[in-house]
Length: 364
Image (cartoon, rainbow, N blue to C red):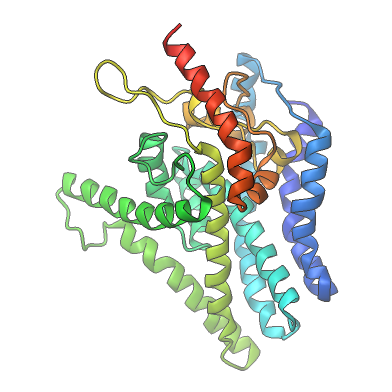
């Protein structure tokens, strides 16, 4: 991979720096991160265009093993824990007064923890390494969404593009209806998967072996410790910490669910002659190979290849011309998804094209 593209993945660290800069500058500067993500990135993303270059097989094998790319995700884990701790601490300063300041700061933090943090957790959670899985769980702990580790890997990737998957948006379903199903049904499904796993191992559901119990407890413990430490440092009970922590968590996983909504909207796998759903392939996820936004999102937008090859590392994910293509990168698509009439008018014709392509593929 060329040097500029290698360096490009470090751009993700710009976002926490912007949140910190905006906070200390004060006032409307707290909106700096929002402006950067939804104005600057979307504009530059459009101007830079789509990157359809793929690595050759020998190159991919070498690049996939380079520690450099793992180091970036490892470093992000430590940055995010420090960043969330900093954010919880500085709200005790009393510098945030107006609604605009609070709004800009809290949303800015969630763009870091959700937009990038959960993306990194997603990347690490798919790997076999115990260390990478541990880092994934740490990141998910900071946004109160640890059950995602179970539901995404053991649920979503198995049932994607079927009516059984809570995280696959149906055609003509608004994001707001999708959010409710994906959040609550996804959590319930994670519990079901964990129960089934424990029963197979002949272990009790309510025991130390139940990961869902730990995943519910650890974010509470983390938030409690932050509150106690910061209250001692501030000389008062900083009640803002748990409120802020929960709020940024909700916004962070809402951002994740927006991405889920975009990635699989309306796509359904066909049923083969045996009565089973066909195997997942690059036709079953919306793809977006936009150069700039993919740097910030560790190529998550090359989602078609990710679902076809879940263990593949982000730096070697391929672009597929045959995959359904999103018209814009995720930052722009997120804004569109928030306005259902615009979303439907933009995406339903593209969905119809995808369905026609699938029909031609299986009925030549």
